[in-house]
Length: 509
Ligand code: HEM
Image (tube, rainbow, N blue to C red; front, side):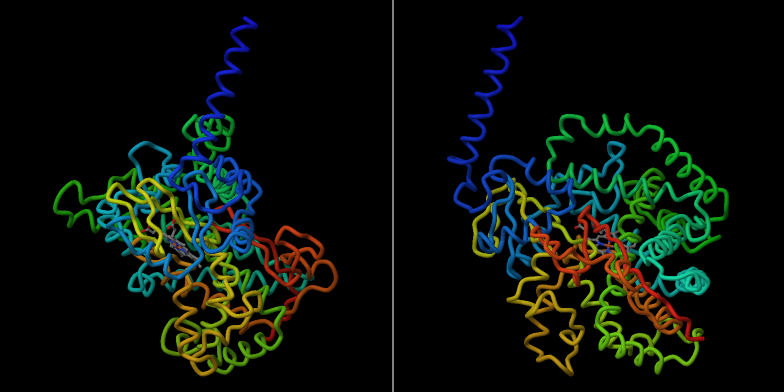
C-alpha cells in the first residue's frame, strides 16, 4: 500500500514536471513574456478571479511586460487597438472561447452569451436582439420609466433618513426592469425582500463562473457538479422562482406584455424551419441571462457615474445645469431629441464606462481551427485563447491621457480635437465590438440616461461626510491597485461588483 502511494506521488510529480517543462521550454507561446506562475498554470488566473482582482493584475502585467503578455499556459492578452479589431472583429478566424461553456447549465441549452458557433449565434441574435434593440426600447420605455419613478420616490423618502449607499437601490431597480423585460414579471426587489435571494444567488454564481472560466480545468474535473450539489437548497429555491416566473407568464396571452417571451413567440411563428425557432428551454435560459448581462452591468455604470460626479464638482455642476435647463418638469424626461441633445450627460456616461467599465475583464476568444490568426502582427496558433482586458486598455495612456482622471470633456468634439476623440473611440470597448458585442447597448444608454437625468433633476447630492463618504473608493496605502481613494473600485466577476457611493441627497422639488 505504502509503495503504491509512493509510486502514485512519484508518477504525479513526474507528470507535472513534464507538463510544466513543456509549457516553459517547448510550448508555441514560450517566447511571450509573463509571470512564471501564469505560464505554468491557469490556476494563477483562477486565484486572481477568486479575489476579483484579475483586471488589476493584468494591468500590472502590461506595465511590467509590455503590450502582449502570456497570462496562462495557452493565453495571451493584448493592450492595443489593433489587437481589439484583430480579435473581436474577426469571425472567420476567431471564436468565442470554449470557456463560455461554463455558463451552460443544461447540456445543449445555450443563451446568446454562451453560444460558440458563429452561425448558431447569428440566428439567435436576430431574434433575441429584437427584445433589446432601439425599436423595442421605444415600446418598453414606459414600463422602464414607471420603475425609475418608483425608485425616485423611494430615494426621496430615504433621503430624509441620512446618507444613502446607492449601490443596492440601483441594483434592485435594474433587476426589476430586467424582470419585466425578460419575463413580464414584477419582481418588486425595490420594495420587498422576498425575491432578493435571486440577486445574491446570481452574484455568487457569477463569481464561481468567473473562477471556472479562468481555470477551466476545475470545470472539466466536475467542480460545477460538486458546487451544484453543495448549493442544492439555494438552487431549488432558484428553480422554484424560475418555475413561477415561467408559469405566470405562459398563463397569460402572448401579447399581454412587451417582453422577451412575446417577441420570441412571435418570431417562432415566422420561423422557416425548426432550427430557426427558439425552444422554450432556450428562451428561459436567455431570459435568466438578462439579469447578469443587463442588470448588474447597467447598475454598475450608474453607480460609478454617481461616484465620479459626486467627487468632481465642476462636472456635477455642468451636468446639473444641462439637465435642469433642458427639462422643466420630470414628465419631460424621456427619450427623444431633448434627451439625446444632452451631450454632457452622454459624455459623463461614456467617461464612466471608460474609467469604470461594468464588464472590466478579458472577454476570452479562441483562435479557431482555421488559424493561425495574425493579432497585432503576432502569428497566434489555433487553440490559443486571446483577449484584450477592458479595464487595462481603458487606462492605457496612449489612448486616454490622464487615464485615472474623470474627464467627460474628452468625448466632446467642441473641447477635444477630433483626432484625439477618434483614437479614444477605437480603444473604447465597454460593450465589446463585433458580432458578439453587447446586444443591449441601446437599453443600457436609455436606462443610464433616464436614471441619471432624473436623479440630477430631482436632487442635489454630495458625498456623505466622514468615513461613509469614502465607500466605493480605494484605500490609500494599498499597493495592489486599490490604493486610490478617488477611483471607484471594481471587483471583477464578469460584471464588476462594486459598493457605494454613499451620498447625501437633498430633494430640490
Ligand atoms: C452599461 C451596461 C452594459 C455593459 C457595459 C454591457 C457589456 C457587455 C459586453 C462587454 C458584452 C460582451 C460579452 C462577451 O463577449 O462575453 C455584452 C454582451 C451582451 N449583453 Fe451587454 N452590457 C450592458 C448592458 C446590457 C443590457 C441592458 C442588456 C439587456 C438585457 C444586455 C444584454 C447583453 C447580451 C444579450 C449579450 C450577449 C450578446 C451576444 O453574445 O450576442 N447588456 N454586454
